[in-house]
Amino acid sequence: MGDKLPIKIESKAQTHTELDVSVRDHSLKVDEPENFGGKDKAPNPLEYMFTALASCLNVTAHQVAEEHEVEIDSLEIDIEGELDLAGFMGEDERAGFQEVNVEARIETNADEETEQKILEEAEDRCPVSDNIQHKTDLKLEKN
Image (cartoon, rainbow, N blue to C red; front, side, top):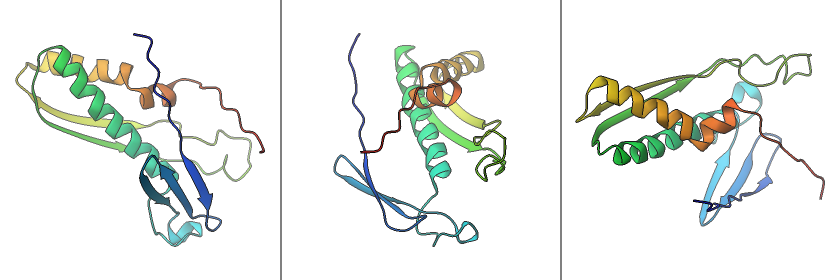
């Protein structure tokens, strides 16, 4: 299957922390909490990243389960990580998370071993997980 799914967003800064984003026919806002100079009008970029990971794992786990003829009755995904701000502040450190912890609680009509296999396969096949776990070329251009 060689199909491609183009993804595009458009955004405009409203302040140094607030960003308005358009995605297809949807609008969303990004901001920082007050203790980081924002007005706390919306989640920050890293919270959206975790949201993207959880939602992508959800979609992928349901796809994998369907392929294995397993019915998911319940799936809860919690994600957390602690960011060292040194890299963001310009110090010689990596700017991203050192570790992201995902906790999944799944209930299906299958045994625990099958549930674990579904979650592992979902992690492997989830595009957001793949982009977090592997280097992806990023080209930033001034237009």
